[in-house]
Length: 232
Ligand code: HEC
Image (cartoon, rainbow, N blue to C red):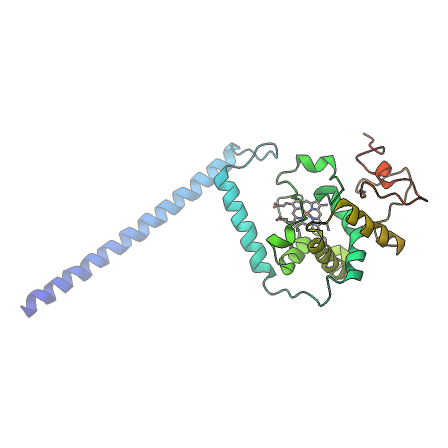
């Protein structure tokens, strides 16, 4: 009886010893084949990198997963400074946003530039962005940009301005075009960043709230890239 059990244990161990090398070799072969096929696919040029065709749903899902996980992990240790979304900061950020972001993302009452329509991935509307990400995540995105997309790193603008911009984005949710325009006017009255100088000579990255027209200036919209100043 004892002997029979011993014998069975011996054969089981032996079977295990024989199976493992086979499993490892098969896994290795599959991995090598996968790598070979992936490289072969890349060399054939069959993949369409054109921005004019969409990803397959599964590729889109995967890329989205990579993007959101990366943003979450990288922003995890970032702490928001106190009062980054205070009123003074919001006012400071509105000119910065109008000049550097609205061209691609638009704002309440501000059309994005027509070049943004051809981008893939598309620059999303940011009025509800603070519902999708934490303040630290939004800060990380703005500071670092997003690879393989048109979203640039804005690190050169300085962390203070970027935190102020995070504060502004929080306030954009549900904001009317008039309220955004008032905010923009208030920031200009304070000599804010991003003013519409260069009358009649628009810089390519300028956008302004549609109705923003202080009585002593020509309406910024007439100097915006969408209207009046469009030159090819
Ligand atoms: C040249 C165009 C361009 C400019 C300028 C630009 N962005 Fe973006 N932005 C993009 C694109 C394109 C994406 C989408 C990237 C993606 O999906 O991977 C994006 C994504 C984002 C996101 C993530 C949105 C989401 O829902 O996932 C935030 C936040 C953002 N931008 C903020 C800003 C801010 C703030 C500025 C100005 C300081 C700015 N962007 C300037 C093109 C731009």
